[in-house]
Length: 263
Image (cartoon, rainbow, N blue to C red; front, top):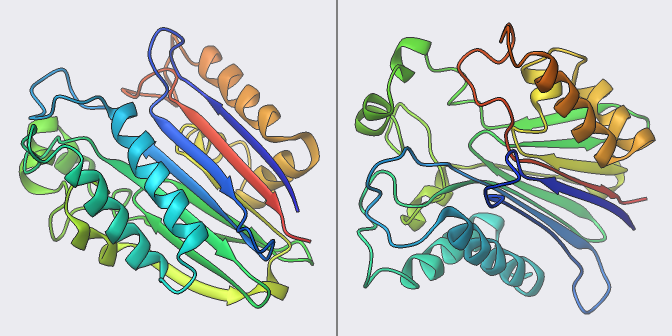
């Protein structure tokens, strides 16, 4: 198995809120990819003493340990247990019911000799490429399907949509949110390679419309994960003033790409 991992902060003066990892069980059979995109809170009270990087490091660490060692657990069960474990680490000091308690998007992929399992929660992406070259995109598109008017202010989103029925879900402090994730299993023989990306990296396709998901995967596979992030950064810099593509979004976002060749 060959892997390629790049994670770059959107702002060099601020900590990277993403988490990424690749795990190999001690048996040497199969492997896993873990990807988190920490949700940047507004400059208001969050009810928590801890930063988003503190949260993603602990949730990511728990997911890595459980995904590698808990082969008898489903990915939904793994995410639920990891959220519960992370919440327990700061339940006594923080108001975990606050809508802006630290939280993250999640991508998990785990493979063995026969199957590839996946889980996606919120707006990070998982791409599966078949040995013949076809790319299947696994997305949780609930946030993307919401009308722009519903996302007008942070207060409106927090009150009506964030981790609520009819809105969208992230991994925060409630273990039951794991059941809301997009999950599935495909035969191992149907997946030659996979890539997990935070939305800072998927901007190449989703924001700047430089190519479809297959073209994006081609960039990663042929030029490397770093090449994709570099392309995104150049596009962001070119749109810094006019903001024809970026609109109200931050100019640069944390961007993480994890690629695994399973062949």
